[in-house]
Structure formats: structure tokens, C-alpha cells
Amino acid sequence: MTLKELEKQLLALSPDEKVQAIQLLAQSLSSSWQGIEKTPGVCGGEARITKTRIPVWVLMEARHLGYTDADLLTSYPSITATDLANAWVYAEAHLDEIELAIKRNEVA
Image 1 (cartoon, rainbow, N blue to C red):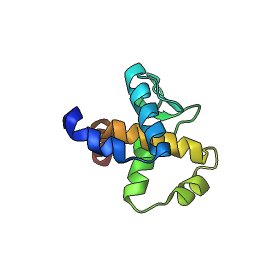
Image 2: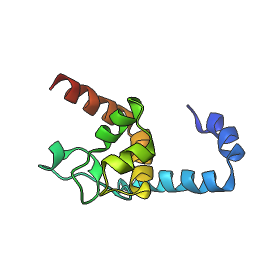
Image 3: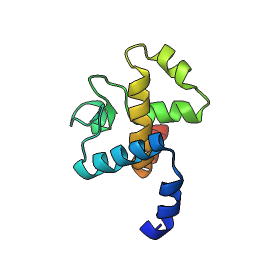
Image 4: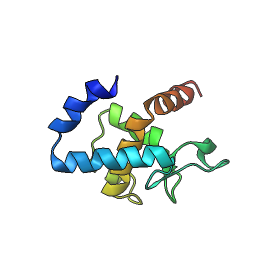
């Protein structure tokens, strides 16, 4: 997709969505994702919720299986709705990485 193709969609966003888009772009430039961290030797170096051992791919797989955010917050009481929002933004921006992690762990 080109910027020209994206321009119409960006302009159609609500003000709140535009703020989220700006935050997403800023995070992607700095490769620092709010609330998400990768540490070699922890969870196989996979992206995970900061200060937890809950990989983003696990949350995405649960979502694909039909779990709601409320279900996930109940299942993982150490995370917050903000943590989930950060995970969804990260996963959307790194979809190939997350899908590969899910596939790797299906085989395991």
C-alpha cells in the first residue's frame, strides 16, 4: 500500500483514532513499544507484556480461539486492559512475527 492510497483512510479516522495512528507510527520508528518488551532468554525472546511472562502471541492465539478481552483479563489477573490494548497494537504492527510464533508453538 502506498501513502497516497492510505491518505484517504487516515483522513477519515476520528480524532481519537488519529491519535492512536500517530502513537503507532511513533512507536514503530523507535522500536520501543509501550508495555511490550523482548528479553533474550525470557519466553524465548518473544514479545511479551512488560514485567510478565505472557507472550503477545499467546494472547493473539486465545483471541483467535474466541476468548474476549474480559476472558483474558480473568485468565491473566496480572495484566490490565491497557496491557491488552498495547498487545493488540503490537500484534497488528508485527502480524508476521506473531503468526510465525503461533505456528512455531503449534508444532512444539
